[in-house]
Length: 589
Image 1 (cartoon, rainbow, N blue to C red):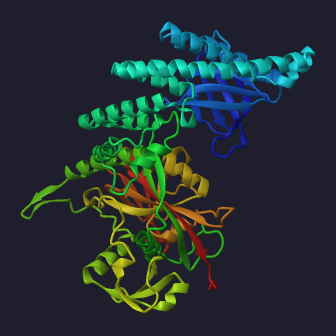
Image 2: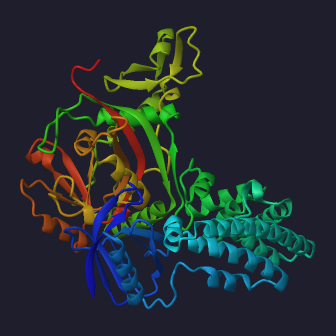
Image 3: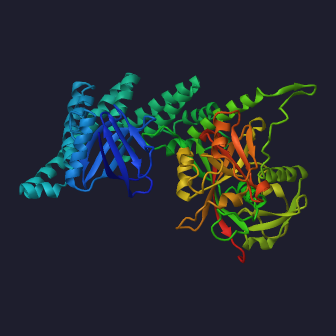
């Protein structure tokens, strides 16, 4: 076993952070300084190769828990330490061959084709392998050490010329074989040759007509078969393959997208095509963050949720003054296939669990008397817009609204103002009487809240970078409570009041805007506590070992501040909307 410190390059931020690295037989783990839990751990078969890169970099490719292969870059203090770590990792995982030499693997892969095609492929990859291996080291340093700068320049020029010749020869040979496979309707061989073309980089402008024709034919066939089978795995594979083949414009792509939407139970409005196009290479998840700020009816609805849940109450977690309002600037809908699927499954499990507790009465089956519905403050705007829609309420939009782009309208049912955004195509030539529902949605997109599961809309406040991480990879319970303590245990904290969530939000240094997440949350059977000093472990055990699914901490009752909600399962929360907003402080016009 060996332990030392390396600086790991952050994929998200781009800078290096010190990490404690532990190495043993068939095991590599790295930790954040001071933490006892490893950030990642690799076992036998996970580390695929390792080599020394420029700048004292230890570089290794490894498989993560979900099967995704990622390149890790860790910086050592000097060249000697770098080479030592490379040697130790190779020894720990019994690697026999230096990772920088890719030529043998490339030759083995190309030998699967016929002899004519294999000769072209091997010739090309031999030249590419030579140049690729050379680039692992500093060219100037090698030349200086050998004293043969001129010889090295000449060798590199010959290598470049050889690459271009190999590309042309490879392309001609591939086109001939693809034409033959298409003529014979040999789908298996066509697919194999297409894989070779893509591996060699024959995409975009460098995609010959024959390759493009074969790609469209293969994509159409696979999409059609997957749509008929209605199997989600086959559909996802076919859609991703069509994107890789640059054939998303084939007629079969649209029906496959709709079928996939149906079998995965995606909410209406999700842009499945963009989810496919945004998919990162090597990653299984489909994720798209769609800016819906131009949908002014939804923007007005979310603005109403902030307005109606605003409570100007100060707590010890508040840094600075309390804003008088939070003004919505931008809204993005999070369309994350993996998180949505996990959320739906967990919601259904909790719904069925609660259903089993129902008791028979003369009025039918009802929930037990001690069951607590959360009824968060976010239900206030939901009820308000439902009443507005049912009443047919109208407002007068004055021609003077052109310069403001938004108006305040009085709601006679609540005696409160509605902030409404005027669409850009509105006719400002005269005052107009318009239904209020022209300017505000009557509900948020997606399936209705599941009452039996105690599902609710709740807020989560955090930093902008943390918000991006949450909507991509979900909440992390190992970081729960790090922002401002963990009064009710080590869980995910949510708020019914935007003011409470705002306490934990930090401004983006570039825009000055704050970010909070509007979440769907399954609260199930809440464990209620109004104690001044609740026992965090008791709250955890009530949910993790008992019959409860969440904690409802009533600080409003015991302290006059806010009610808080806490869950201990990431799958009980879906981060539905990223809301970027501006704090309106006292004295602001």
